[in-house]
Length: 359
Image (cartoon, rainbow, N blue to C red):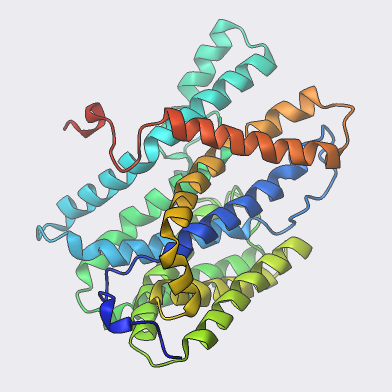
């Protein structure tokens, strides 16, 4: 069996429905990784020791989608096109981010029993987070820590997207592979793993380097996915390789984290994401046929990512005498409920509220 109807799939426009499913899977890995904060002592290792690798999956996918959509920006002005791209990106993510920020801020102020003056001070000092500037090195009060990923992504794209506009020939996207190797190589020799994104390196955070590396790698994966789509590899074999890469990353992350193996897992993620976007595997055919079930997974994963951390603030206080393995399923259930509420309350990311669209 060959790739399923490849000729019928528009070359750069194919949308990998399977990616929406894997978004949710890797988001859940991040949620489980953060479960180590559920108890007051924070001495337990989470059930998903290397779940932080899920964020790097998000970076790779973001870089690939950035490369996939760059052809839509054709004004001829690098500055205008970059501003337009970043603006659209922020409009999609900001409503949910703002909702999660407000909930986390209220919870923190309530638990700390802050006086009005303290609340006002924390609100002012949290402005860098609201402005997505925390990973630039600007200090302040951190309300919802998962927003580091969004800050690092936006800052990195402000640099990488203009470069992408300048590279007209996709065959020259190999320069982004070089940037990815340099970024991850630097992290390998200075940190030895990808776990801590908040480590200050004198002029930048390590998480910002992760964003540059992952997004650059995603751009290169876009060209690889196109080549795979045009190939004649067996669809079943591609599907097996895709699934093997994803499951290997998840299994290793479940069993172990904080090691040099993180960088090998990045390579496996790059292969798996490229295969997902190639549309050449039999798994892609399955997901495409059931897209109405899998497409909502992407939206749920984003809401889940932004709204789960608040419970790691609440549970150490209200669950003092409750064991970790009792809190864990409650924590997961509460996180999904919070994500569902956010999706109901927050405006549809694809149709931002009108006041956000005004220039």
